[in-house]
Image 1 (cartoon, rainbow, N blue to C red):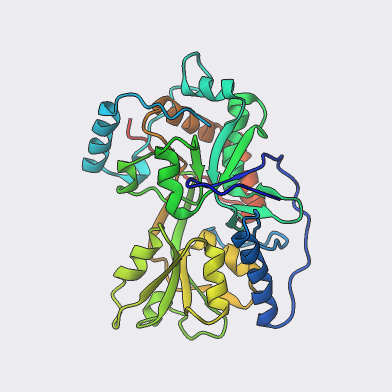
Image 2 (image 1 turned 180 degrees about the vertical axis):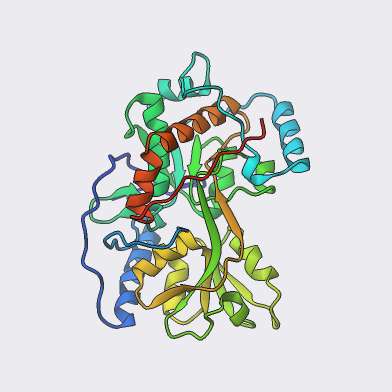
Length: 352
C-alpha cells in the first residue's frame, strides 16, 4: 500500500472496519520475534503503511483537507490562558448541549459538506490504533471512537480519512488544521491544554514498564538506575523517565514509534520501555518474551484532541462519547480490544 509522507502525517486510504482474523501466536526463539518486528519497521522506513504483526485478541489487564483559515485567535488565546490557570485535566472539556446534532453553520456541517472526517491516528499501537497487514485496515479502540464520531455526522462510520501521525506530531496536526480530530492514546495534560482542546476522558491508563522476561527489574523504573529506557518522542513518558528519582539517572532513549522501542528492547539496546500500560500490553502481546511490571507510575487519562477554534465540535464529540457509553458501544469496543471481561466507562466531568 503506497502513501505520501508529509509534515503532518502519512495519508492512509479510507477503509471500512473489519473483523480481525486470528493469526497463530508466534513460537520459537527471541530472534524470531526480533526478525518479525524488524520487517515491520523496514516497511515503515520504505514509506509503506505497515504495522505490528497481529495476534488473536488477548485478555489483558485494565490499561491498555479542511481549510486552514482561522478566525481571530483572541477567544482561543483567552480560553488557553484560563485553562492553564485553572487546569484540571480530567474536567477540562466542554459539556455537550444535548444529543449529537449537526446544526447549520456548525463545524460538523462543514465536515459533512466535505464528505469525510479527517482523523490523526496511530498505526503502530496494537489494540488501540494499528494497521492490520492482513487487510491494510486501521483498527483498534481509538479507531472505534473516531468511527462513532463519523457515524454521528454522516450516519456512516466509514466516512473517515485517516492520517497516520507520530506522537510528536499530534499537537501540530490539530493546530495546523490538517486533521479534525486526533485519536492517538493521547493523555490530557495541562501543558497540552494550552494548545488544543480535548474531549472528556474516554479511557484511563497508567504508566508502567515493559522488560524482557529474564530481566531482574521487576519493580519497574526503581530497578533501572543508570540504564537506558525507551519512549516515543513527544510523549509525556519521556519526562516521567527523565525525572524519576534514580541514582544514577535513567537515560530516556527517544524513537518515533513504540514498535521502534520494541526492536531496541529485543536487540538489548535498551533495558526497558516505559509508557502507558494500554500501550505496553499491546507490545507484550507482540513479543511473548516480555512482561509488564512495576507499580503504576502515573495516571494517563486519554482524550480526543481538537482545535480550540471549534468549541461546537468539542461539545458534539462529547455528546457522541456520552451516547456511546450509554448505548453499549464503548463497552463492546473495550471487550473486543482491551479486555473481554469488560469495564465501566470513565465518568465524564466538564469545565463548562
